[in-house]
Image (tube, rainbow, N blue to C red; front, side, top):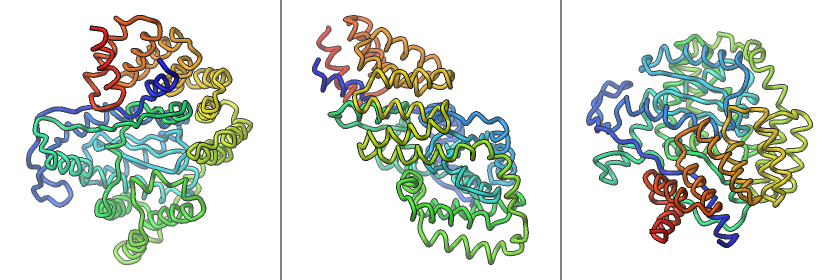
Length: 436
């Protein structure tokens, strides 16, 4: 097997997962009360959360280890969703360790705010605006609407492909390491339309005001995002791709705040309470900002400068899990796999219940020609975070590297049951045909 082919084989990216079930047909829009064609049931929406959210959180370096902060997000979020159009949904609110500025929700109500956005906000009203906006997407069933439109367009009648993506054949080991994903949720978290965003803004304002917050928080949130976009557009690339921002949205929020909700502008924004509950996170802000800059370098294949930025972040926070993993990625991208492994070992020690470092460690062990160690890492990852088709494929690669064709065949066959349209699936299919 050539090095180029080996690199490509282990460049596992977003896999295909399928949700099947009975089509729901027409449903009452919870916001408007009107009948709408909806081919995704509420039970499907909740099932999607359970299936995909753990993997997405792992891609975002896991949940922030701050019980006080997590309880605070839950309190603010519950107050908002309690006055929403779908208060019965199983909402859950999480802070995750990703550095980029973003927030997202799955269709059943599982939400996440990255630490990157939490350190840039400065009051509770802005947080309420953010969570209210995400709740707006859940209540208006925007993901279910989008998937319904996609199903109708593609004439899929027996089930719905929730996430499907094809990776291109990669030519460099750096791309394999940096581009590795678990079972991402790119289709689920894909860009909302401008109409969806306007509706979520309006619902978010309504919910946050009904929950007792100052509507100025929504304006403050948008102003913060716009200002950050002007200073560092790369920091908001993901958020603006999933939540398209426009001056019209900002102006509408200002107008609605002054006219419809003007009587509530005398409410407190609860800045002090927000600062108290995010104090631990804000102590990491220098490390977070250094990592944001390093990730921007990584995206431009500038791995040596990225390594310097990650080293800077680790001087401030030596045991920071994202910093350790990112340093390992930067080193591996430069072919420094032994050094990378040392940082991955530190990351696994710092956050043993999280899976991203395990997955990367398995790939790095393959690069070091240690297939037995790689297989052990992939097996451990599968126990920590089951349900990732890419792990099956990589377990097959490890067995093949150990000259165990029978075991490799089993894993490749299982992988093909879950992912049929990827280059990895094509390779697995070819190997199975050769071994018959």
